[in-house]
Picture 1 (cartoon, rainbow, N blue to C red):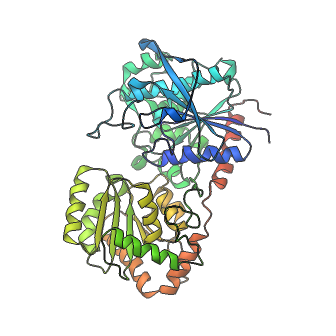
Picture 2 (picture 1 turned 120 degrees about the vertical axis):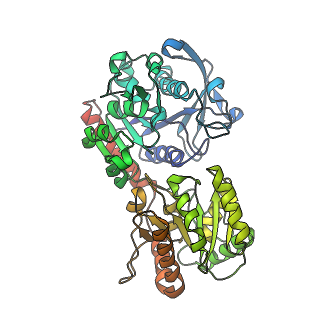
Picture 3 (picture 1 turned 30 degrees about the vertical axis):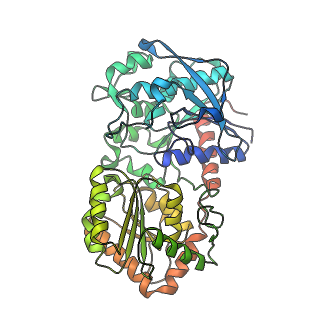
Length: 493
């Protein structure tokens, strides 16, 4: 196969900036596409937390037309994804991106200028191709933040010879967030008011950037096959289900992969020297004991259940809060790591005081601790209300910690329910998110841990051999890109 030129445009990319799974995808997929022989590159903002001293600065600024605002001039810095040759271009515009947080202020409210911030990023990516004389075959955008680039490709840059062979793919990581702004944003996009209609950009008399991306992308992907089906429905479409159904024939569901350079119990630097595989699970017990000690829990033989999550309603944290007292009536321990809605910080802090021998909580994010928790726990709890893909359930499986999940989205696709008759399965799954179902399913998993030791150990070994590597997903995306070029009738050879 000839080499594809692929430009990723995204609001975040691990390890430079991250709030969720989007960053993990953009930080991993380009590396594996590069291994397949393609020229994959990334464009993202230069946030305050990205150290410019470690990057190479372009000698000339980049002019970015912003409609009624006028031309904005940005700096461009270049780095690479760690342990790869994937170029990462950082758009440096201090007024927009020189902030501690990516999207929200300290109170959790989205920045008032998020519309202009991410239109700038999207337009800058197009201008950067011209500055680099990079001629992409695929423009790969992610969520609402860069959906404007799909719109630009079919309007302003439709006759630009640098994009003559370019098709676009929009990946939806979370349909709930759509980038809906006042209709005057049309004057900043500068694509012409004729596109402000209910079939393209307009929704509820606002500019809906995700809708613009959905209607103008050549192909669309969702981050799991189940989620691709879910976003066609009213429950998960958040008002865009009808628009999605018009593109159903162009929609693929591609389950995210795991970056096994980072998430691998055999090589994980955060659990050294007690690294382990399916034949050395005694080291997993050593990590459990150390984790119990670190979290202030008694070091004893009880199932240790982990929660590593954003503490928000989407992740089912309200259901966990409702169920927590009944859960802790069982002979178990729970460790929690995460942050989110303010009430959760106080609520679970109080639970820790009430149950000091059973429940431990760390508010915030600690990458090293998250690895130790995945490795040290016996079971991993993930009762998401909806979950486009999810990665922690895959991490927990690779670390021999069977997940307990609500069967939605990527959780449905990646967890096979335990079968008591045969002993087969890769975790414990329930349907219908409520406290009763959650407690009953945790009870089922705990019963299995206590009373079916051999089957539980066999499950641990089985799930550690699962293949969640990005190689599989990268090949699927390669096929998706070729299909996009075919459907856009773009020449490729």
